[in-house]
Amino acid sequence: MNVVFAVKQYVSKMIEDSGPGMKVLLMDKETTGIVSMVYTQSEILQKEVYLFERIDSQNREIMKHLKAICFLRPTKENVDYLIQELRRPKYSIYFIYFSNVISKSDVKSLAEADEQEVVAEVQEFYGDYIAVNPHLFSLNILGCCQGRNWDPAQLSRTTQGLTALLLSLKKCPMIRYQLSSEAAKRLAECVKQVITKEYELFEFRRTEVPPLLLILDRCDDAITPLLNQWTYQAMVHELLGINNNRIDLSRVPGISKDLREVVLSAENDEFYANNMYLNFAEIGSNIKNLMEDFQKRKPKEQQKLESIADMKAFVENYPQFKKMSGTVSKHVTVVGELSRLVSERNLLEVSEVEQELACQNDHSSALQNVKRLLQNPKVTEFDAARLVMLYALHYERHSSNSLPGLIVDLRNKGVSEKYRKLVSAVVEYGGKRVRGSDLFSPKDAVAITKQFLKGLKGVENVYTQHQPFLHETLDHLIKGRLKENLYPYLGPSTLRDRCAY
Image (spheres, helix red, strand yellow):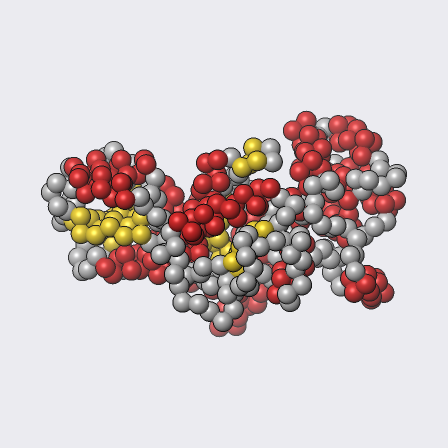
């Protein structure tokens, strides 16, 4: 179940089916992002696609020597654009591919507009999602709910994205959902409705282990996204931000023009693919090893590489190295900026207290450490608010709860009201009243024993003690121990590959 491969296969087939000759790839805003995640522009150029255009662009020239490959989401807006296009075609022939199910009435409207008979084919290729990693996809949706209820437009888009995912992976799953979440149940019902309505599309060969789609709600674990991360990809996303594999480095002090925006893609960057899940300390060491390997081949150019600054200086001083290893240059810059932010924001100390709040149960120590960090001028208002949010979630019903005092401390620190409001908001969103699980105390004898032994042995890495609740949920699922009273099946459970959303 590789989503990058699935979408890449769709794009490859579109291009191959259009035959030899020069082509233009006509996309919308969303499909542009979908394609860019699995193919670089240079890779597509090698397949005789010489032009990339947006369907909503008003300034496209007439180029009758080009074939048009249209890859579009089946929205009303895109269908209208296509109708206009077909009435006055700019290209010789059109191969139209929709990223999801298109209605018969829309196909009829397109056929009526095609008076010049330039359409060679219309197909559905279900690449209607952003393939981030082989086993991770996104719909790039921010704010899918209004309060505790789905925003109707976002529910529709999420349903479309999930059903497209299933079709692209050729899976017709049983569906389970988190009982404590009405939103999870609603999404499960919507996906089931599409599978029932489009049953012919979902008639795949049965496998020995029938697929399972498990729909979960983030409110069951609001802790994990509040913690600082210490593996490479997660750190870059947390501290710099990743948007469709692109990282904006324009605010980095002294950044060179060619590094103001960089792309991190495991598909096209071997170093990134090999290091994205390693911890921060290993990344710096691996970059250093790469550079030292090069130096061994260039004895005259040897110099010591003891710090990130040394590495950056080395790259700047050797144009030949920079040309040969643009990838390394990029990663030295990214790791250097991560290192600067970790120091500037005192994140090692902040993270240690975050882990204490997430994993330990010593209220007195946790409160003392949070108060101490709130007095530290290096701790940003963002990090200060997150610490108090973690405290609020963990010690929500503790007899000595000191949340009001911490809110006062935030105000005294100058933390803006928008961040202070998040403290009560996160408790309302993911507090004990809402959760279907108990995040902070072991639930059975085995878990209690594990925690006891962990305490005896000590913690190998204080920054990565926390294990997301999702890990436990999936472990129970794989072992057949996930309770049906907490995660019921939608419809009969006669059938039991597994997919979590």
